[in-house]
Length: 204
Image 1: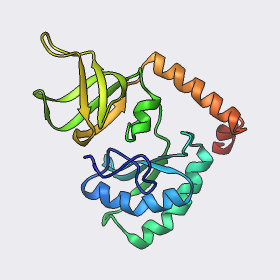
Image 2 (image 1 turned 90 degrees about the vertical axis):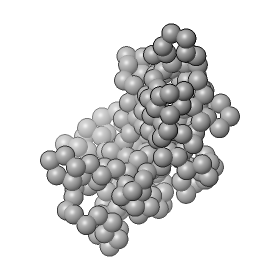
Image 3 (image 1 turned 45 degrees about the vertical axis):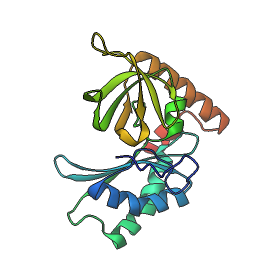
């Protein structure tokens, strides 16, 4: 669900798409720690599949997130979660980067990945539907311009989806997206002087 009061300049949140229910409670606990550590919260989600998992997605402002970053953030979050105890049941904590087919939660995400295919779900019906898929054209006004690839005959191919209506948005994994993501990652690693084998070495 969208918090329409959020803006990209709001460092405390900065997201168009925010959590609801228990996920929102978890996000309110972890977000201050994530931000104090120099990261941005992408998504907090409780997943009940073969045991309860608290999934926290985060990244640095430049979009990077290494294995070492995940480990450091996990160590910082664990004692806070023990004290705040936002979830009554036993759970495991999972820290990760957003991944290539990442959630799109900030206006800047839609700017960065313009030209790529996204799936967007809305909280209410827009033109008779709640699910949209197509190429991101650009953020437009208080919304996102999407060039749909599943428009039915007689429907407008391009549609502006208001930010307030977006309940979830993700990139769709394609060969083009993978190529661009790898190029971006390589450039960011070079700019930050990160060894390409650093994460693998730390994992081992």
